[in-house]
Amino acid sequence: MDSIQISPDNWILWQWEIWPVVKLNATIVFTWLVMAILATSSWLVTRRLTTGTDIPRFQNLLEVLVTGIRDQIRDVSRQEPGKYLPFVGTLFLFIAMANLLSIVPGYRPPTGSLSTAAALATCVFIAVPLFGIASQGIGGYFKHYVQPTLLMLPFNAIGEVSRTLALAVRLYGNMMSGTVIAAILIGFVPFFVPVLMQALGLLTGMIQAYIFAVLAMVYIASANVARRPPSSGT
Image 1 (cartoon, rainbow, N blue to C red):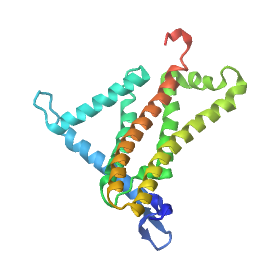
Image 2: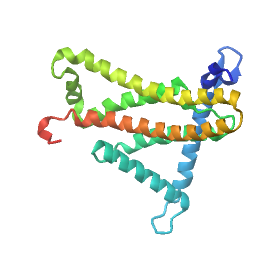
Image 3: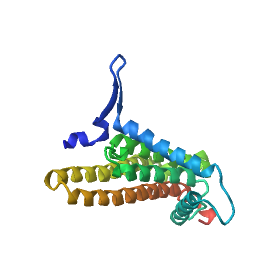
Image 4: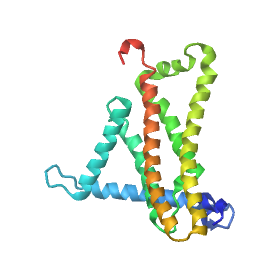
């Protein structure tokens, strides 16, 4: 397998030849597939919720998942997880499902695309000031950028951007490296080792989903906690 073609960006599944030329690559198609699976699954599970002790199996699974994410957010941020749960939980579920589907033949996880990783990191980059402004106000949030002196403004701004870049590169690098290694091993040992690498890739994909969600929560929590005035007592 050509390492250049490993990226789902380079796999064109459909193309509109007439101007303007429209191309649908694997990244776009599989991203919409993951979103459709998550949306449909959520609708099917939540359309008939019950509160008794005899609840459906999938509702029980969803409650365990949501409770686990909620507990992780509370442990990481030391804050009530309610307002963070939709955003951080969506990030985790999307990355986890995108990586989990890699067991399906012919599927390539969109998280192996730098475009997807950059888009997810951009969501975090936008969410951090939004949560910070909602918690501290515009003046309170942006005051951090000129602390301890006005001269620190460019350095603090660069720090915010570099943190986002690191988040994107970390996810893309880990997912892409696993795909490349599996493709190389298929050429040398076409049976057992690729199966083991596929299993290892699933584990790595789940870990990367967890790490991405935790780092996003850390960045958002730091915008809400570190910028509070000392009199707040936190």
